[in-house]
Image (cartoon, rainbow, N blue to C red; front, side, top):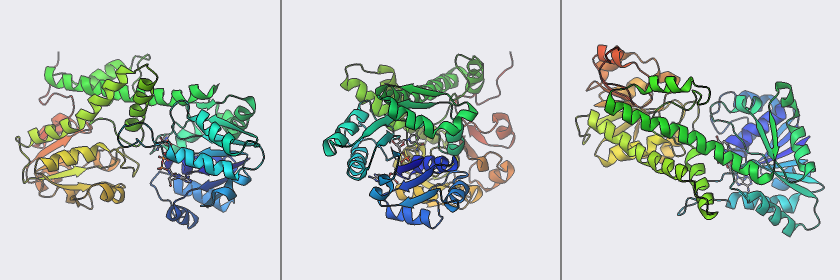
Length: 441
Ligand SMILES: NC(=O)c1ccc[n+]([C@@H]2O[C@H](COP(=O)([O-])OP(=O)(O)OC[C@H]3O[C@@H](n4cnc5c(N)ncnc54)[C@H](O)[C@@H]3O)[C@@H](O)[C@H]2O)c1
């Protein structure tokens, strides 16, 4: 089948490359000319494990191409995906749908013959109706169907997630649209990926409900971690103790500095606004949003407390800047809020991230960037582990202890074992775990 992917960012590029790998003929379209030029030259503008090889193989096989010319890609397509950004709108936190509607208008102007327009971007309930209205208004004669197909991939494991999804959700109000999109995913039937065909509004809401639920789970364990600190319990053991219950499950129960990234913050906020607008407020999610917001600055206070109550004039080393490992994505990364709060308190910041420093430089100014974990730690008054990249999981503790100006390590991801750290002479602070070895009862 012929597919046009409008928007070639984290989702569009991965989806486009994977569809091409299934054997479809895919054109990835983006209005960012630099991005398209890089892709045409074989350079991948983002960091996503395995994506460079997948793009290269499929481009060489002639199944995957790139263009800035939307009309060219859309005219021949059986299905046109909208995979543009839907960031939070400044001021009110509602999803900014201007990119989606602009794409819909451009698609309407270009489409030729029966076309299925598929929204892959995360969009509030009712957006599909509006996309349909826009296209119908511009092209009263056209034959088309608007389908919702929300994407659930995770950055850092995006290719695996796309090719082995837990489920595929297809929201359509007509059978023709649903069957074209189902056919596109047919290669995944082999892996028995469950396909859920629902109404369009249901599919749109399913995506937000999924993200809000995961954000709630993270926030729940973060609050339990705070309580653990007060009562001398260990949050990792509590998480294991509840996670082994199949009704709860062990995923997303890792206490940390609060969720961030390109999806959870904006999607929880957008769901909150949609629910308020419809007179059915989601109070649980409202609380999650506010608890998570406050947590980032609370992390900075934790770091300050570990530095004897003041970081004024002190040098703080920060390991890991991206919102999670294996991506270069800095959107809404907890590191940003934590670093700003430390700078507000008078700290100087030196940071290192294995893949995120180019993106970080655009959002975090006034930070000294190091070449590796050890040069980041050298002479620092404290070292803070913010993102749990593999490269930070087995640091040479004796070496670190020697090069730090003060032996303070704040581990916001609970990577290290408290007893080991004490043995190496660190003042070690982590999340929701007792500072002294707990008595065994
Ligand atoms: N990033 C994720 O992990 C993830 C996961 C699931 C869902 N989503 C959702 O997918 C959508 C896209 O997210 P992303 O992270 O890929 O965003 P992104 O910012 O990385 O990519 C969006 C791309 O669309 C391009 N674009 C915007 N308007 C265009 C137009 N009219 N024509 C052509 N190109 C246009 C931009 O230049 C950009 O390259 C969002 O709604 C997001 O919520 C993201």
